[in-house]
Length: 457
Image 1 (cartoon, one colour):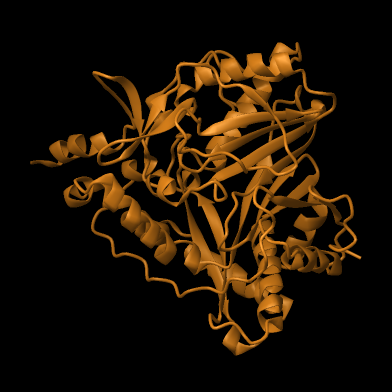
Image 2 (cartoon, rainbow, N blue to C red):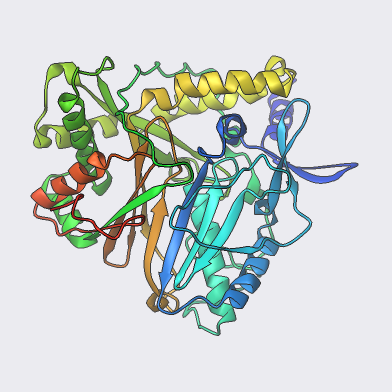
């Protein structure tokens, strides 16, 4: 078979939309295929975006906006189903409801329950939130849906966006309802850019995991910090690093302090922070499915405590080495190649689930002490901007790392959200104290508790 034939053959792995005698269904993308096997009622796989508006939410207008959004992006309005060999998504025959919000986000949602969607929209007073399963999408895809939902809501409320959103135009991954749905929006971009013949990346050592009693079942604490984006960028520029690199170094510093304070010293000497990477910046795609990988930034605690200045510089150079198209392509080759194996494809699903859980432990959360995801600067059409006071980005819960962080910028503010299943707040406390020690002004709040004095004195 020639090169053209191989390309035609390989395209069957790219498209996720299928149709047979039962109707339309969607295949899970490469990153999503492992998620159903490792998801349960606590580790829900849900991450969250939220926005605080300048007035109480009009629930009826929100229902209308949600209807417009899922009609334009129908590949989000799906439920998980089991096949003989693979999981798949089945379109829902009804519109999704709008749910009341809760102080504990990303909990009490079982994607395995028949009819349960892969996302939900929630409202409470001035807050609009959307929670998405990683089985369906990543941060960029979820934010695109959320921004589109907000745009439709404001439009129904009679607010002028200030820029043209019709005639097929896009506004920073905000999807206009006038543009027809494209297959690229729900493609498996891992398979589109699958590189053959590359060596696999070296296996990372097992990482340190800090120990804490868990919060009561159903609780997921959110501690948030608000800073001046200009102040943080100035501090990063002064140190000749990026904002992301500065945040990773702060996180590593908190983790190394916890490691050295643990008695007896932990058996795993490596403290490692996972930094997700949006692959769309390296491999052009407009998919709203998962299309991200990660780099691991770590330190060997057997060498002793490093100064914060050392951590900043070492994080900078580690990121430079790891965040490179060729290095990322090795991870892409390993992760995307499995779905192409005929032997793997013919294994019954219940056996795949067993091995998926084993691989997730071996090549997933066992390699990291925590993660911090920076979504970057969020933009909205100028007519909508005055009506949004703040944005939030809350990571998915994990019983292995317990506490994780997400970062985004909106207008002139930097929002840092920690999501935790742990009773301990040591990571958050050390993280925000370090930021204050750099002379940065931080305002901290806790979703589950009114008092914040135990986080920052």
